[in-house]
Length: 164
Image 1 (tube, rainbow, N blue to C red):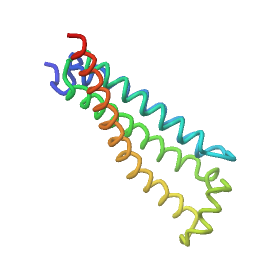
Image 2 (image 1 turned 60 degrees about the vertical axis):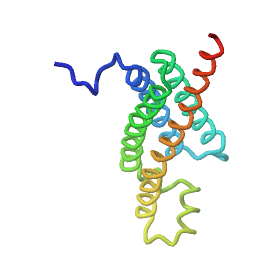
Image 3 (image 1 turned 90 degrees about the vertical axis):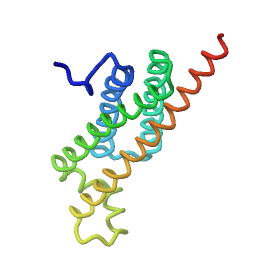
Image 4 (image 1 turned 30 degrees about the horizontal axis):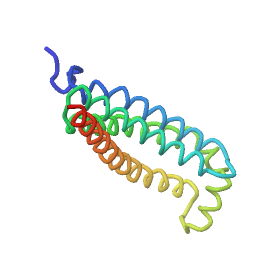
């Protein structure tokens, strides 16, 4: 017997699941680059990650709308993608944090932020930073997923409506 929540005939899962895996891999790459390298400017990394996430959510929402003809299917695909991507992103964030703590401790930007923070120890500061990202990242991801897939679903609805 198949679990109803894992019914891949539903467009929200058929598109949310694979796009969520890609968002998760994007988040994994972001975590590795941001934790293990010292860049002069992180703007391109942050903006690139955000744009990739928005594009993936939009595409998942568009495809789910086209398959189901409902804006709610687009939004559900985005929520699914966000939840899966966030789970992968958080798992890799914490794995990176504990596996590469020695490297993160030597990051000059992390050291500068630590000096300004007043935290008791560098390790405490790194954990607090990861905790902040653990809350802020998934909430922002979910917000962007809902907003982007709503727009994608509305765009699909307008295209379908104008074609009649």
